[in-house]
Length: 438
Ligand code: GAP
Image (cartoon, rainbow, N blue to C red):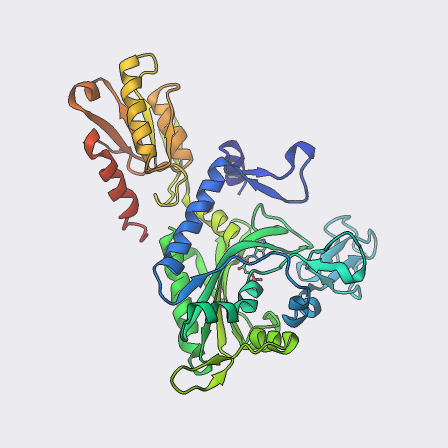
């Protein structure tokens, strides 16, 4: 984990948040390479689950919504963690994280007061200039509710028949008592969620279907499925809205923990929003004219946990003799740069000119890096460390034969490719990459 945190900072994937002011409680900012990785994950997800399907539509709802939504969804009442307060130093911890009578903060063995009021995880703020109880609003703790409250709007405008889904990617906020493990648990994070509306009698079929779809996604982004464990969540540990839940846990370096989740939410959300809003959220079957509340299967993907698992899974240190090569074996579709272009020597104008032309042309279609510093070996290593799948070198032969050397990150094999064929070559390698199933 330390190696990933170090690499992420050193190469511009992820920086400590508010760093020049000493940071802010486990917050993290995505840097120039991190935002590319994130955008690539999001693009892949959106293409896979929205653009390539007829039955799922996307939305982008507000983060701050009418506070009645959180009353109806049960979050005001239920979305809380049990607290344990150290009897000595009075510091508070998530009760589930306490192992024995020893305080993780002060080390005293005086035990914990468990009677402390449950702590609601929703962030509160005020709408407008008056700071009274009537102006209290919340930052959404899950993107899901944006989809439930827009269920009718989507249904009326898109005229979908069951089963169909609504997808959303966006920020969620939770005032976690114990954030930590880098970007694993933070107070501000992103989710990629689908609310999939089905007939009640078909819930089991679609629950199984989405279980497979989550596994397929895990494979598509290059995460080793052998490190994934599906855990059936017992009733007393399930979220208040869930009738059945499976967690997809990943073997993180700090232990096996939740990466993604799948829940059968029944008609809990639509029923409660119908009751609290007074608006009918029933679906009308176009053939039988029967009206009823659909049930919901919810696959949910933590965005930041995806980034963490992808980085951890892709990381490799290869030692050959005295040389150590750090490689991020990112799926080419996800890697921030698709290729890097180098002139063999930076002081030979004709090499630089041709390399520059190739670089500019490729940039029309791919995000490409440029590097003309130091020896070629070092430049390769610098790209390997950030996951760039291909390095393109322009040398003296290129000037005569109109070709370049293309070096593959994983095999380090090199082949000469005609400049006129370069774009097609890269496209085939990046987007038809079957090795990782993308
Ligand atoms: N709408 C259902 C829902 O929000 P959840 O299991 O509470 O379910 C979904 O959250 C996903 O969001 C989790 O599987 C996890 O990947 C991610 N997640 C939850 N809390 C997080 C946190 N504090 N920091 C980062 N990711 C988090």
